[in-house]
Length: 68
Image 1 (cartoon, one colour):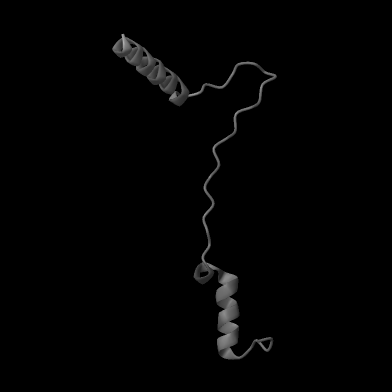
Image 2 (image 1 turned 90 degrees about the vertical axis):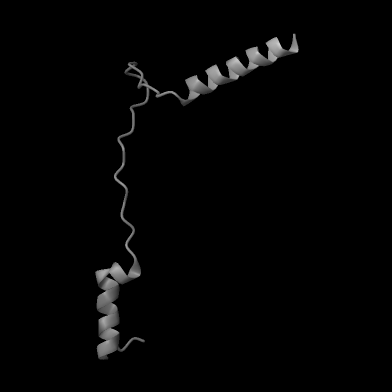
């Protein structure tokens, strides 16, 4: 009897997980929220790639920058 209950619970858990993981389709209800567009990942700019940072370093190395 316990084995039957364990199998039933296992099947229930698998079914709920399968349904939860499934692809969600946007609703056809016009009053519902609109689906978000996928965002392009923004590229992180490291300090050594930043043109302003490189220009600032060049000015300091040439002695043109008197601030620091």
